[in-house]
Image (tube, rainbow, N blue to C red; front, side):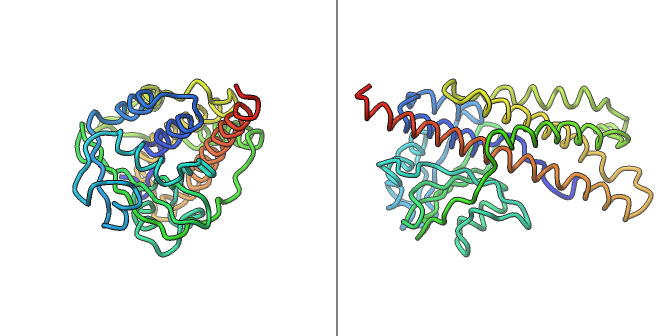
Length: 285
């Protein structure tokens, strides 16, 4: 097993994008729910404590059944959509955007993903998903006393260039790293990459997203698929501990590039949606 997680497209990313376009008036609630059901047919929403239940409009700390409860929580956290949603993809040594010292920060870091809702500097909520089985996704809602300012993300042009470079570097990294199947035989990395990409293709992006943002997210999925296969073989046939460590070090900057590109693409897409909504309000459209 790899000593670190390779961040494939996440339920948090789906919730952030789809709920964001819903808040901007570019998607119906049913579309958001359908997108979340691609991750699991059953969603259970738990409040971490009574403060979280109150902030999210949940009846208590017991489970609320159905993805619609997530939309209720998001709408309640920031009814005016002044800052909307924010995706976080933390990793050890890279915790930008997390509200320090909170239960949400600890849970999001452990999961490698999460969603913040609310305006910076004001109370809000955080949501963290966890797989509870092949058909169940559990979301825990946390109260966040004061949301931090959003960290700066690369623009779409910079992120797209970085992803092109990352695709090239990831392919080079995979060269020479053997992969072994569960039966102990060598496997075909290209076939494994294609399988991983096909799995992510189930999770569609909203049609209102800018084309460049979609290209970046697609490229990030491709790099993640390559790195997933590379990570499976990263500890195999390494002649020494230093060799295995060297392979891990080679993958780490690519993992960081994927996180940065996804965060930048999502943030830019949501900003575009808010601007579009403000324009429609101004023109009466």
